Image (spheres, rainbow, N blue to C red):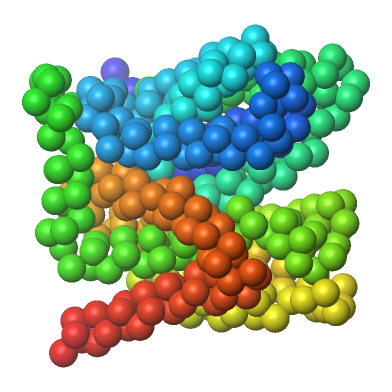
Length: 408
């Protein structure tokens, strides 16, 4: 009697598609509350500008996960962590339907926390199933799920609200999508070489020291320090662009809200393809750090060009710059995560990507607030745009100098 042959190893392509769609669904969840900012603030008696509190609460929730989430979920597999992220985000979204502002702020925080596993758990899965020579492309395809989710939120949820019962129906639809994503991930249990649960025992001291361990991991390697600093610098430009671009076009260039929204949609759409393109180029170069260096310079240059937009700028020029920003300022995240994952010590990919993404998200939270102060102090946007582009340009110089030192 012949021994049964082992089943063939599953293809990594369907898993990449699944993880990318999960990334898109959780990105859609994080965009849903700001998308309905006007009706949500009106229903709770808050001014429209209070929608920024929801966006900040979501980003803060993700930052908290990057500090403590990996330690909290250390005994769970990567797939299980992503499932929990989807499920908790879905439940939190349902709380928003009650229409209480304090509940919405808490729900936004939990949605951000649920989004957190996409970087460490998703990166850990992809590192173990994708070929080395295609890794940057695959990571960038996964990160393309972020603008894809944002675009889907803008196209799908308002239509649900218009035809199927208002904002509550749209938020319920978003929650349902997250639950479907969690169920889809369950199909992969046992079919992929997911990491076994850690044998480290959970205790309070382990949790309290988790942030220190994450930061120590970044600090112990000069390459990790440089890549993380570059991600933070690139996040300055990306955070300012995502937070101010539509307002910049309306307030400074005199565009209508509809026209500014169309330019923003063009930027997001190019960001989807741009992330895949930049990952492919990184694989062709064979070095994500080298690719990230050029992306730093391209992002800095694009922000400087955006500062040239004014009331007399042509529609074509603004459209060209919007597309360019999608290809440069929006497109580096997958390459950044690939660089962190490849340099991380064996078995610590999730921790390295958590630490780097936490620092990146701190740029998302802080720099739009600083930009607001610069606009107030200077009476315009140009200075803030140039300064936010200077940060990645300097990071590019630092990465180039670091590469030359290693080559000696």
